Length: 106
Image (cartoon, rainbow, N blue to C red; front, side, top):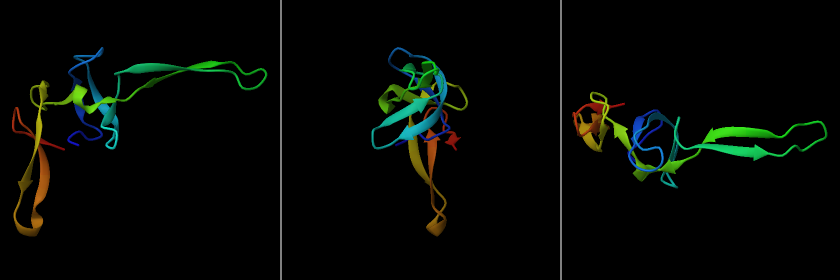
């Protein structure tokens, strides 16, 4: 998966299209990510004991990876990501690079 926790992403389709947010959780087996400020959901909890009130809990639901793209660090626009190798021999490292501006992603 090319999207990691902490990346700034742009939603490219769905009801929250155009919104930017930071990835807080990644579920690689399900191909889903949780983005802060996107796909807000409300869960209603019934009171379980006497004297306790019911509650509404707001949280951010997961969305599919195909609906988000990494935001380019320079321009802020959505961009694709590719992997390149840096270094030689045993010091080779696989790094992520934003295709739009050729900048390295942490």
